[in-house]
Length: 154
Figure (tube, rainbow, N blue to C red):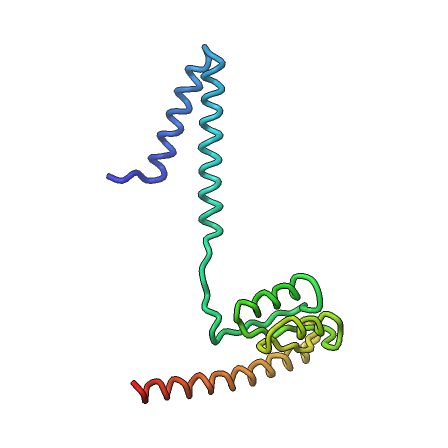
C-alpha cells in the first residue's frame, strides 16, 4: 500500500500532538515539536512552489506571439526575450517611430515586427490583426509547401 498525502499529514499531526502533550513537562520537547512542525511546513511549501513553477518547454518553431505595450517596460522586455527564444514576435507599439520601437528593431532579430497599435482604438487593433493574419498566411503557405515536399520525398 502506498502512502497518500493524507496519510502523511495524519502521521505528522499525530506526532506533533504527541510532542505537544509531552512538552507540557519539558520545554526542550516543546522546542523540538515546534521545530519539526516548522520543518514540515517549510518542506510542504517548497514542494508546492517547485510544483507550481514546473517549466514546460514550448518549441518556438512556427509559433508567433502578439504583444501590446512594447514601447517600454514589461512588453518591451517580453518582446525581446521571446524573440531571443526563437518566436516570431509582433510588437505592438503606440509610437512605432519612437525610441522604444527603434531599440526593439536594433536589438531583436528579423523575426520581430513592430506594429502601430493603440489598444483603445478598435480600428487599429483590427488593422494589426489583419496584418498578422496576412503575414501568418504567408508562413502557413510556406509550411504547407515544406510538408508536401517532405511527403513527396518520403
